[in-house]
Length: 203
Image 1 (cartoon, rainbow, N blue to C red):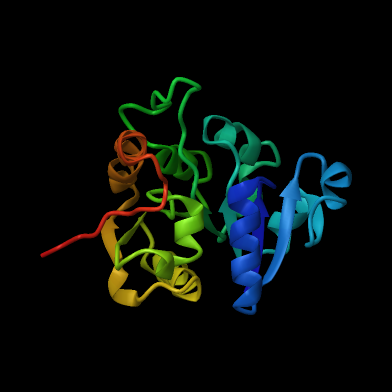
Image 2 (tube, rainbow, N blue to C red):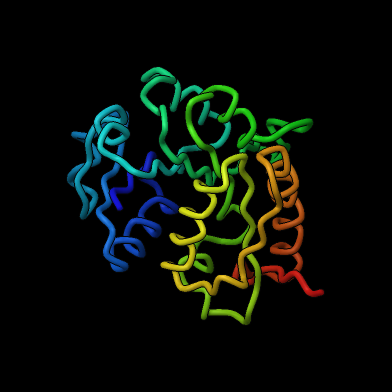
């Protein structure tokens, strides 16, 4: 697939390398493509150009600014696109930007013709792109469109996860559960002094 990664930071670059290794075509979308092009090993275009050529758009922008960044090119640009939201929207003091909702829901409302899926936000990205670095654990998906969630699940498998590791939480309204975990993640990380961990659903 053609994957547009919006954002050029640590999260985006790790995902880009992993999905390129799996055979996907990756393009970065940036608000300043000329400045970022020299720093990255993949094509860098404007956000509008990256979205236009993509089968899947990945939001890896700073979560507190994601709605503003993505909607700057107009909601119609995302019509029919799978939008995978991997960001956590938090303030500098780690308070949730959407305490009664979620960034996933905010993006679906702002991009009504898109198919927003929330995932890949409940572990350190080093673990997400290399699941064998720890023991078996779980990832979660939330979204209103089953076809979009199936696309995202396939991309997760391409990162090295087993299909049974993926827990479908339901509609995009369940994204707030995954986003609320953000605070527990940092509490655990501070307790164990290491981000190399994840949680597992045990039944």
